[in-house]
Length: 403
Image 1 (cartoon, rainbow, N blue to C red):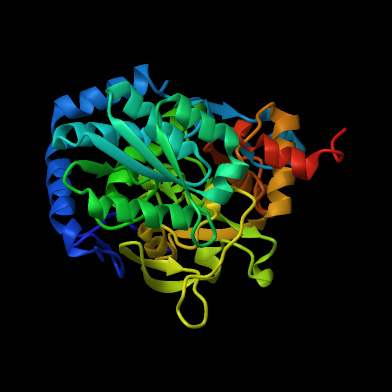
Image 2: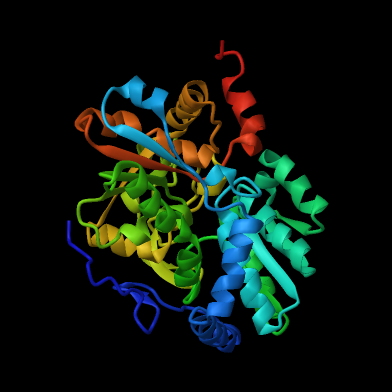
């Protein structure tokens, strides 16, 4: 592991070492430069930070608890397990941390129309939520397949006043929704702000989303010191685009004793080619405005991917994760659809918490990690979202196998 005690990434060009950057049409250059300038000015202003913190506390319901998982700890008989309860945020996931920050950026840049992409629907719901609160027009792009497996979130977005545009191209999942959102943005850049939902895309988005999501790790640092008077030995989080993981990991980056594990979707198995294990099996390339690890076919085309969780069904990953993989600061592993399903049952029946299927991937890594831990150690899992949205998928895959 290489220490990152002087961690100051990205650089002025928006690069995390060899990754990140800004690979975009000329139409978007001035908009991104303006967004970068406005963000760097606003984040230094106490009035902006106070407004955002007030929204986080009194609208989003922060700080979220850090809960000791007593029965899960007893089940493994090893390290103490704590759960960072992002599932208790307003709208049911960590996504509102970012959309609250970005809606304030849109307000300060004078944009009246908001667009977003979504996979599992949680970012779409969070975007529709802030648009309703601030009275802005909202359009959400969502793969047609994802609209079918996340019907409840589609209805939630419509209830909040958003227009949901199903995308029928490609695999009809998150990648394709993002492509359509980018096309919309290029055509309507003068009056439209694109609220990207993860630490992906061209600079400055990976840094902006990371900064807004880092409230997760900042709270966790303070809470675990108060509870245990110690730092954790391990942090676990699922990784698709990677915002909940970076949000947890970033404030611990200089703490060399803290081991961080990002858990990707192995789908039907990484040998099957039906997976989303980008950091485990991918290679560097340029995609959707950034250079990062990608799952690519032999001729360089973006590979078809699969995960039972719509939010992890993405062939790329945030460029900061690519950098952290190469620097060996974060370890990246993957678990299968079946392991994630069983982890959902395990957490539900031992702690009374039904996690999102995305989150369940992090829980599913415990059987690999826990045997090597001791009773004195501490493991914290980021419970990035709740599982209500996945009930149709859970019923389809688990009904008949439960008691």
